[in-house]
Image (cartoon, rainbow, N blue to C red; front, top):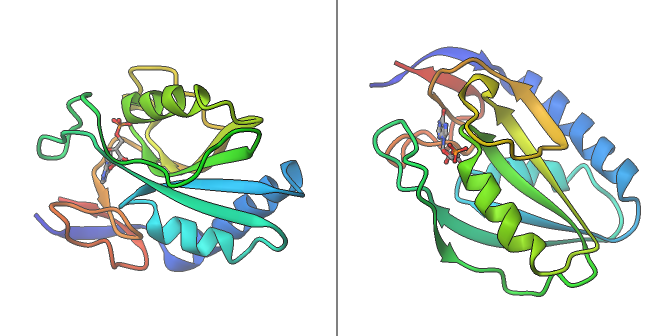
Length: 170
Ligand code: IMP
């Protein structure tokens, strides 16, 4: 399997990420705490924060979604927890993609229990036709069809995260 068609170009992604950053900052103009999900969200996060001025803090979590090939099994395991508390903070979860929604639902539930002042979610990509649970996502970069994509942080067997665009894997 290898990447074939480019689904979203570098320019398209950069433009949309700048818009999302502005939208999030409009909703949270003061203190903002971003929680990124490793590893897939690292590129999205790094571009996003560079479009935000003022007080922004970051933390990271790592989850394993027990992926079997290119489909998620629905089981989620916490591999790395946050370093700091969420108590009273305006938190936005930064995810690469929402597919079935199971990973996000799990994450939102555990983070909500830590008493943030606000909890929202930003995903660069969404595959609405694949949703199994109704995980709420306030900021979505692009809705895409049910195809397996790589690049811009997204991998297949740890490869292709470095591509500056998003491509379909066939
Ligand atoms: P969900 O729990 O089914 O929503 O799966 C979310 C996780 O599956 C994402 O954080 C990705 O790690 C992975 N994933 C889902 N679709 C894709 C894809 O098209 N390319 C790469 N990873 C994907």
